[in-house]
Length: 426
Image (tube, rainbow, N blue to C red; front, side, top):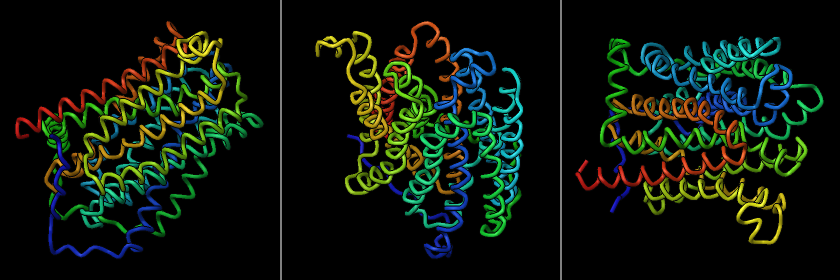
């Protein structure tokens, strides 16, 4: 039987950590960078059709081009990890925010598929460390026993970016076009950059000579394929790709096309989904703290999230459930319920970071977090690219079923790998 992993002991028992308020303000400011990241990556959910029309692209082309964002994001994980070892979190996040400003301004004037792909690459690079920076700052400045709580807070603040890209952005795009929506992150990034200069103190891991880039890459990959993290890395590869595929790309078009919902109405549903992604991770954290069983929570959550996605097409276009109820298609409330339920179930996802940190010695915590985050975004890039031909061949219903099956397979695969690791004494 799989049990809760032991908490990692502090790396240095003599470390003096700041008060909760001394820690909270910098972490909340740094988490705003993750808010920008989520805003940028989920904009296609309410803008893909207009971007495609303006740039003469298909919906599948937009999915493939936005997948470049995730590829650039993934490629930046290890370089950002190395930079965080060599320089302070403040220096790294300041640089990244500057890159976001450049990418957002470029999006205002982009023409054609190539230009849009370039802006996605620049934005992917600029936002690639927006989660690692606050997580690393938390790892260096907070008591390790509270890391799971702080990581949930960071993710909750970051997920508010998806609120901005739901109803508010849907209204803005409807009235002022998608280019203005892509330009707004520039103003947001400039504001956060100013606050960072005022509120964040430079914090480095140590005064030791940092390792070479080659050794850092090897160490991250070694940790990622270690028996203790194989299941976590597998589920991370699928988990974020499914979540961002639904929230960032396909849920909006599904609601607008299959249920004839207006853009703002679809944005309201995405807002409800986003509220689940903000509030439920902290609820899941409390459940895990009370009862343990993080492996079971992760496996069951992803299986149920997959079931919710597979049921969506079953209620439309004479699907199995629609026929069972004697209707050609079920009402939009059926789809809204399933989309919100998906948000509840997939909110077990942040436990992957806690398991990643707990699986290694404290001095390797940053590398483990980098390995998990790398798997998140390599998976997002790969699966987003694959979803384009799936959409071309089987339509939106096929994409949702594809993502649902991936979530279920990921949950079952994670459970089997972790069960084998437990039985082997790994």
